[in-house]
Length: 133
Image (cartoon, rainbow, N blue to C red; front, top):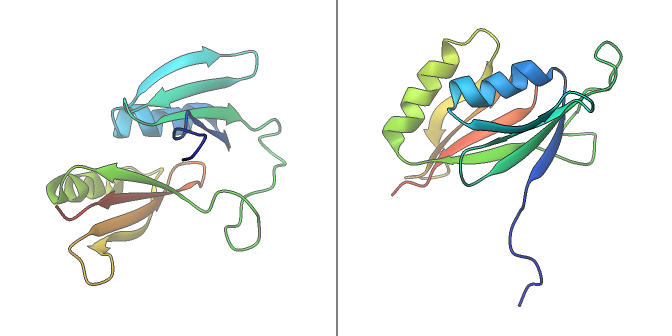
């Protein structure tokens, strides 16, 4: 039996705290809590998953993450409830100039699961996945 009980929160260092917060709160409908300008940091949650977002110290001279060269986060995968919601979210993200779509909704393997991948305004890769049920 595992000694842990799931993720309490995932902490991410971001390029622009406001832009990444807005991605989650305005585009995805998450709630913000725990803003602290002295760090600066904030937290966002969809009611199941909680992320802590930390502003990178030097916004001009930072090292961007390369999923093929760096240890750490490859991408964050978030569940959506239905295929229709995945398609609607894709359209919403396409219309947001600060989001880069890596690929549109497509089957995972032979399906019926589907997923899509994008980069939020600071470049973090986020996958949205529908279970196919």
